[in-house]
Structure formats: C-alpha cells, structure tokens
Image (cartoon, rainbow, N blue to C red; front, side):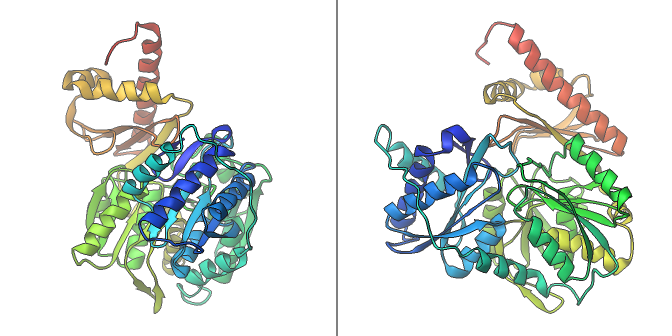
Length: 480
C-alpha cells in the first residue's frame, strides 16, 4: 500500500481485509492524537462503484467502531459531496475509491474535519500502521446508519442557486454516466438549471475513466454521441466524481486546466494555485496571481493555505485534470459559495456551461478564444515503478544524459524539476516526464503551437520512454 498524489492506493487483493482495517485504525489514532476527534465522534464513510468498494467500506466501518468512533454510511457518493458533508458536520471522513485506476486496484482517501489530510498526516499514518507490523488485525466488517440522502441533498443545494434561473435552457447536454458516482447527481443538477439532458453509456461494470488522459475508446464514444444526439456538450467525471470531463459540440475533449481557467473567471478569483503540469498560458490568461506547485491536491491545498495566511482573498486552485478547489468564500450571482478545499468536478463543468449559455457560442469557439498553447497528455500503463524511477534517475544524473535522451526532439532551452522533469525546447515546445504518484504509470505532458505539433511531440515523447525501457531490459543492470 502506498500514499500517492491523493490518498492510499494498491491492488484490491492487498487492500481488502487486514490492510483497510489497519490503515483505518491508524487514521483513527491520528485523529485522536491530534485532537481532531474524540471517542464517540461521527466519521463519514463513502465509496465508489467498483466491485471491491462495498466490502472495503464495511471493513472500514468495522475498524472505526473498534476504534471507539461512530461511523456513518454515506453510500456511493462523489468525493466532494462527502467532503462537503464532513465540513458541515465537523466530521472526519474516509472515501473508498481508486478514482480513475483499473478495477483490480482500489484506495482510501482520508479527510480530517477541516478537509483533506496533508503530507505530514500521511507520514504519521504510515508510521502508526507500520507499528502494527506482525500483529493480528481484526478486519470484521461493520454496519452503520445510512445518511447518503443528506450528503447528496447538501451537495446539490450548493449549486442550485449559482446560476440565473434556468440559464442552461436551450442547451442539449449529454451526461456520460459510465460508472462514476456523479452520474445521477450530474443529471439532476443540469436539469435543475434548465438543460435538456441526455444520459449516455451507463454501465453496471466499473470503467476506469481518466479525465487527464482520455482513452481512444472514450474519445470515439464522445464524438459519436455528439453527432448522433446533436449535443451542445457532453459532461462526465472520473470514478469518484472529483475530476471533470467535458467535450464540446463536436465531441472534442476540453482540457481540465482550461475548465479550471474558465472557473477562475467565473468566480472572479484573485489567486489561482495550480500544479506545474497545468498549461503554461494560464499566467497571461486572467487577472489573477498564479502560484505553481507539485502535482497532487495536498500541494495545491498547501499553496492555497499559504495564500490565506498571507491575507489574500478570492483563492481557488485547480489541477490539470480539472479538479477544482476553493479556499475562500465566493459570491456568484448573489449566491454564496462556501470553501470546499478538495477536488470538485461539478463547479468547473457548471462554469463552462454557464459561459456557453451567456455568450450563446459553441464550446469549441469559447475554447479557441482563450488562445492557450495546445497541450496534450497521455500515460504508459503497467509501467513498473522501478523502471520509471530508473529513467528519472538517469535523466537527472547529468545534463548530458537529458540532452542525449531528448536529442531526437531538439535542443534544451531550460528545465524545471518541481515535479518530474519539465523541459522547454529551443523552439518553445514543452515536454514533461513524470511518474504517477499512485499507480504503475509513466506520464508525459506536452505543449506546442498547434494541435498537430502537440500530438506529434506526445507520440515522440512516449516512444522515447518505451525505447529506453526496452533497451534497459536488454543491458546489464547498472547503479544509475
């Protein structure tokens, strides 16, 4: 088991039973030792739709009960809805989800009463769990009162008054439902704002949808549905509903950082915190200060908290995957929006649709109007952690190593090592290599002046990674 960019992740076979009980007990002890909870306090438990999640959630509930806490079952609910409910009640929470990763893997996200745990919490929880090494752990499942309806109602109420009445009337919007826990709430929210909603692609089997690296199969589905149903947009989310997916009227996917930028303008934000992987054009695209961080919601949250401590207002953050976080209150069309410092897919989708309705323009035209550099991203799956670590060590070992690796692409103008290696080539193109923080994947992000150039650079970057990995398997092991 391993903490990644957001939560604990691992194979289902490793998480079920002992491990899920162990880490829940460690989390409970961390809450109690920091004063974030005391005996008898309520702790919320949510889950996604993957087949292993109900059983793991029951194990979590049992472990919380044995730790002297009072678990509440929030059922299959979006992560931001669970977090919002926790903030209202002043309660800690656990979300059983593997987000976008395949169904043979799962995870747990942990929330203190004031929001997501931070990196210090992760280290301490890991240390507490390690202290149980070799001990027998009771993994007996438990049952708890169901408050899922209350959590869902609170979340929908957050967005009910955010737009002028029936502002989305006249828009025909597809909702790609697949197996996201956001699928029904998205329909309800959009219909409440007057949209004509077409549910699409609902699945009883779990489908891992990565909103940051959309698969070819998903892209084909979106384009087909857009044409077949004459849609103005298609919206969706990842497995636990904290990362948005949006396609325009042609079925072309809009990048998550563009959705974040649109939301920043929608909220009239003054400070935007976003990872280094978000589009390099963001700084010039809005009237707000930009703070860059490492990849992962804990780093974005840390950046937002630092801005709060500095006395800033109008603070929000977003990731390249589109997940949007707010650290300070906002007022939109007279409606108050309370802080929700965890990733949310609903607000950026609503902001983009509101802009399309207000300007009466297709989403493709709106996206083009921002004139951001063309960006693309993809990943190599089943790419071992050991291989990705070896590649990054090789590239960081010397400038000569990095230059030789990138020679087929061009000369290096400058580089950044904030999170992975981000290189600007001498012709202005950008390529960024970064191992996933919580899955056996190697990610590549690129930017270029045209869409074709970005796609070509992405293909070249992934090919370089494959070639290096293939050559490594053929040569003797080194100490790089």
